[in-house]
Image 1 (cartoon, rainbow, N blue to C red):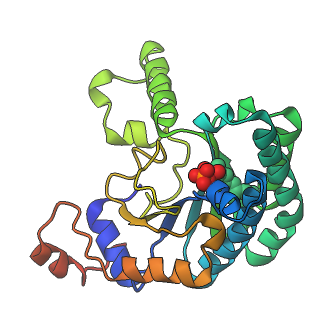
Image 2 (cartoon, protein in one colour):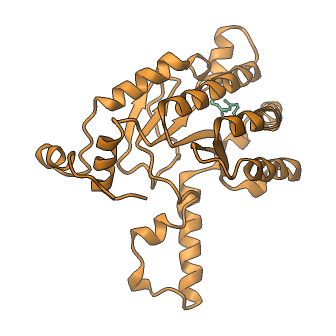
Length: 259
Ligand code: FPP
């Protein structure tokens, strides 16, 4: 987690490439229905967009990419669709891990992973271990993730520390919560992208998105190609992020080098 001023300095120092991009990949089902295909064909096509956006993120110099692959609510979908998604996670991980290593990408899976099969949990751990030394970019896949779940598990951890006498309630501050969320070793998302035309955050990174720039695309996720991603990055580059400050303060801070 970085301070507001540090965020401003970082943008200046990196030519306004977002350090952390978070994406809700929506519209797979509609993309398939529009073509008379089963929804699952949309998810398979969506997996190709995942590969493209990962490669483009590395190319543009994004440091952290978080993809919302499966929400806590997605279990309520038809059983056949859920199992195709699980199978897709397995096969994509199997095929892509080597590519991630080649691109210097570290993989992390965040969410309530105990709900997945033992086989899939094992594969998640193996893929994380195989890529753990990579430093060029971190790819976080949010699976069975919900922002409220994340805040709740952080609060539970705080309550445990208080009841064990390790933490004084008066010492609880934002970093006590932020430091217990699912990902703590990167900056908060600078840019949030949602495809598929809906304009909602849908219980994604609720705490971490306090100052995130929002970008909504009408394209369905399988249509979200390198050019569409570049357009989102360009849109972000043109925005002025104020973090509660005035425009004049931001302009003055743009020249401050933050260590
Ligand atoms: C939302 O579209 C998409 C999902 C719930 C799944 C996303 C999964 C992939 C892109 C597959 C591969 C991913 C990884 C990380 C290996 P939707 O089905 O809600 O579309 P709709 O709104 O049109 O119904």
